[in-house]
Amino acid sequence: MEDRVYFVIDMKSFFASVECAERGLDPLTTNLVVADEERSKGTICLAVTPAMKKLGVKNRCRLFEIPKGIEFIIAKPRMKKYIDYSANIYAIYLKYIDKNDIHTYSIDECIIDATEYLRLYNLKAKEFAQKLMSEILETLHIPSSAGIGTNMYLAKIALDITGKKTPDSIGWLNEEKYRRTLWTHTPLRDFWQISFGTEERLAKYGIFDMERLAHFDENILYREFGVNAELLIDHAWGRESCLMSDIKSYKSKSKSISSSQILPCNYNFLEAKTILKEMIQNGCYDLANQNYATSFIQVFVAYGDKRGDISKGIQHLNAITNLYSIISKSAVKIYNEVVDQSRPVRKIGYNFMDITLAVDEQYDFFTDLNKVKKEKNVVKTVLNVKEKYGKNSLLKGLDLDKKATQKERNSSIGGHKSGEK
Image (cartoon, rainbow, N blue to C red; front, side, top):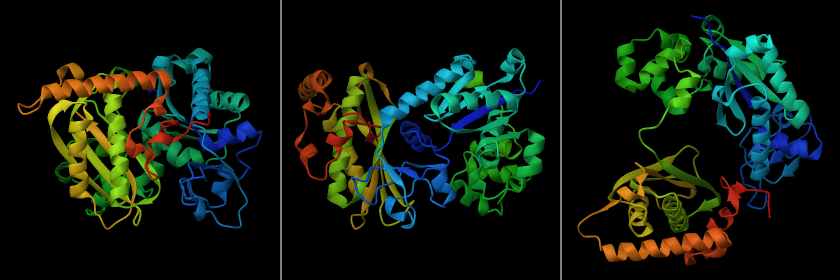
């Protein structure tokens, strides 16, 4: 069987590069960070230019962590602008590639099945990747990196570990080269889909690289990771059976809706609970607006005094619903039970799981259906007003609390400023 050829193309420091392009600056030589300094000096930088990275400044750092000797430009986030640039990049791909051979992995990263196009354009894989990257740079002034592989996993690894370090920003791997050059690479978390937690669990068995993982006892791996062991083993050998057609035809058996936000500063237990109520209220509006209902809710927080420390809980609702009066009770109950009241909260979020159509909603025997009907009518009215006059045309009292964030988030995209008034 003929090897397929996949590209994974990623824009370098995308948000920061867009801000440089808008200013006529080169992100490879300009010190610029994207951050909303109005929040606080502790705000997270959404992106830093490659020039800043060369100076040792890490992506997603906080403003106060940037060494004082470095002069740099601070650009406010403009999410609408970044979405527009992303659409323009996608339009460049569509000039050469059918949409069925492109998978948008994130706002700044795409996976492309380039197999058939190499013959069509009479180009080698690296030449075709360079053609796409050059047009993006010349048209939009956004630099990029690329990984080329004989399967999607290898293309992703070629990008993440190899391509970002080569002079031409392009990496290439097949299974043989992967095993020859990356089997002893560390740390394991550099590899796609291996998290800190997975790395720690593998370390218990003395597994610190892909070579050791590839040759380890599969029975032990299956006991430790269940069905996920199959993916770990395949990736250790550089194998990946998923094709672009599989991605395009995939339909999830279950649906979930989640939201989270990093708070502008550390919040105490009660302040963060107010934020959770705001978020649940907004999430219930979204469910109702899309004619969905949920039967499970998860709540999670991350603390401000220790990175990576998370508390979370999950609860089955006594109904399949989208009503705030029911869902909020469970959310607050989880929050009260799992969150450490003595610690500062810096991130909070929820996950509505087992999403189904609202026509399938169910309530238990003790639910007052007249109250359900009245609340639904109120929600319908609120959604109509918000659609006509804007999300901030109607607010609840808790949204006016000095530590509340929903009013500001209503005018943002993905929790960040849209850049539009």
